[in-house]
Picture 1 (cartoon, rainbow over the protein chains, first blue to last red):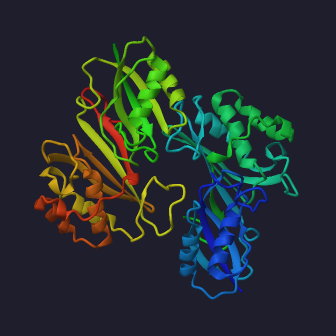
Picture 2 (picture 1 turned 90 degrees about the vertical axis):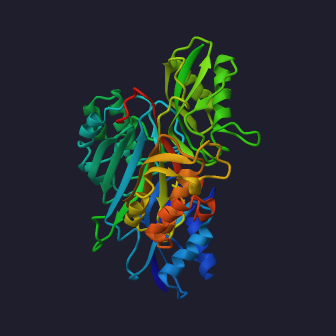
Picture 3 (picture 1 turned 135 degrees about the vertical axis):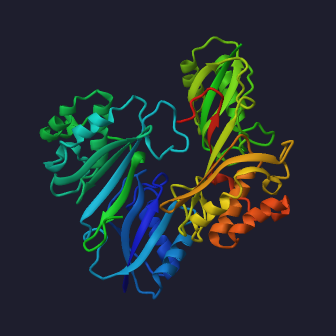
Length: 252
Length: 252
């Protein structure tokens, strides 16, 4: 068996998330079916993150094992041919050691959240960003965000369905910047709780609108109570952008 | 009658172009129907450019006249409400003098063309960029492009259906830059011939692939012969990005 690591880009709109689901199409199912069409083997895809319905990825990292001998480039091309017309693309494919695991070897994950801060409905960015018509104070959002950075109990920002053993995580980065009418939020950590990024973004948006004082974000964190969550931002603004592995160049 | 100038953003994918067509939906028809729904009046939309099927706009400028008294902001909000679910948004609306004309007063037009220079199929940028798998030399493309800038007879780069009286136009700008895997082409002129931008981009791509020598672009121009056209780039990479009017601030 040979282990192949894939980098996946996908538009999450038509999928019930990355992980295989009984009740609807998933990215995992599409990739596994493409791999089976190429190799004739039943394969299982493992991925760095488990994105929800509607969440996008620019560079998800995944792996599977196959017995058939095939060059990585040829496998990538064949997978892409079989993935059409699903909006999933394999942008990189390589052979990795058998002990390399897309999920368990991953030591860092990064997300970007895009807010279209405008009154007009979205056209080209429909399903690609969260439209927020109220003017957002991105500087206040950035200041408030810094109170979440570091080692904390993130119970407030955790989904009821979260399967993580502990709500204690270290948030490495939560930066808010404005690029024209877009407010972009960058989040990075070794790992995140279920809904953590969207929950943090939702509360940051309340700060940006002036509906929450900046200190309220830290107060919500300290409450360690899901009831204190102000708002869960919708999935279609969220992008999984990077997974980091030991020994890999992380500068790009 | 009051003349309202609109700024329109649209995803051109579902439309048979901007201009009203007998055989399919158009941006013009959608906006006129929305305006009629709001005002009860039959209106005619005039626009700075006539984009083809699949071509997008970030800031098309248009106008129409209506008799009903309504504040520009309210009109914009009502139009946007009636435009749903069409991917068209009114991003700005203002009252202009009766002699201001979106098409005839316009003294400058700018387009951007996006090439996704990658092997992998497009996902999030599907219908938003032209995928070119061969590696493009954007510096060669930029150098070649400069031979088209200035006053020329652009017959080679003109559609058979072009209605312009003269093929002689002054091209003010044709810049090629690379942003990661994207090659972006910026074109600006007082006005363009039908298919001119897409025709120029198609030939530039041939230069970028090394299938045309850089000098061949100038040779094709000098031939003044549509038969010399190498390639017409597809519409879905093209964006109308700006229309310029006398007295308006053009720095933004």
